[in-house]
Image (cartoon, rainbow, N blue to C red):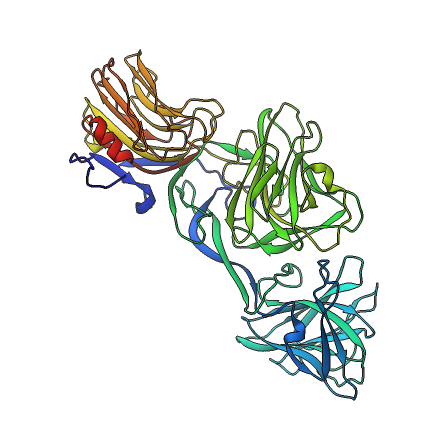
Length: 608
């Protein structure tokens, strides 16, 4: 509420401050009929917490300026060749004359069991070694022979792998060292063969090309974290955490993930029932099909776990697509997914690919929707939730995600020559039969759908001191989507006696005004559109015999001089209708009820 000098002297008989309190008043009742999921934890029900997680991390500095590392018996040439991302930023390292140990080295700080990787390409020399100084036997050799890159000998407690990148002879060389401590040296050594001993001397004067060094312990050799560049400092980025509820029926006090690292409380989330119709939402496995691209788990997702896939483009000139069917209940449909750029700037297309061809294009670099019917929301560290909204009665539509170039404006741009390195990070796909994307519902690694039950929050008027007669209700409400979403309802549990504030549309959005509707003993008492209330956060209704006033955000007061008061209003429902349905699909930060009708000036004060 707006606590200011002109705030009314009257005090509410009941106030719930969900944003600052973070709990349900013991006189109130909250419910959501959770059922155990058919897959392992986490639960299907999620919300944005006020917790942060380490979203991306690279312990190396100057990850693309390896010529600026400490050099030993080698000569560098900066920005000598085209790197895997297509930019001329890769350095060439040449061995000096003479037989000696030849390497580049950088101090790195990381936790136990680090994974060190670097992109390498043979010049006139084919062999490198990745070394840490933590143990005399920690090393891994790599053969960069074009078209046949491989891992050679490794030391004790060391595992390694090599990945071809595109079709230009680049490889990502990756070694995992089972060491403990926090400060080590990471070296890339020129060696003579794939069987060379640790830090073996070499006589080579040949060259190798190096780019994109990375060290962290967020992954392993099964799930290798996608490369993250760093400059003069290490890269470390935290992001808001999307959590699953810990216990059945737990209320969700949510925070704004787009608040630039600040813990901005949104209040309690009240949503209706919804089903994620897409199976395998946790891993894009099962029936998900991929075309002219690859996918593997490579990134920390918004939930703080290594669960997001790298959707990397192939090098041919055909479309790059990730696709799945689902069973559609008909009517409104919304596809949504969390997405982030991988490598060079790319755009995301979400498309219904079987019947309608409807699509939306998203520029993840600027956080904007380029075209189509949908929306985009930032959720921290480059991640965005993108959604496509449309209508379809077809029983088995197909949801498809496409990679297109940074200047592409439609799905047709998905047929382009990829670099084999870039693409998108994707996680948590969802398809729902409604006009908007609700909170994420995890379908796990199985092929079936999962449902989140509807939520209800109410308090009996007898328990909070409202005994009938004149009243005022003030709420601070955000959202309001879907089928006539309710901000609040004062009711006796049926249609005959109620005062309700709702968005007046069967497909409401943030551009739909709020309406106050009153009925007493089955007799219609009036309906007042609250002026300029579509984007309002604070709504108020003052009700007395033949004196009804409504106001939003301190603006114009609308009035009705013909009304009677029901004497049977027994329940205040927050974010639902008289029977706990037609949910707000949004947040209630605060709500208060006064045992009297406030004046028009006071309504403006409490909503300003």
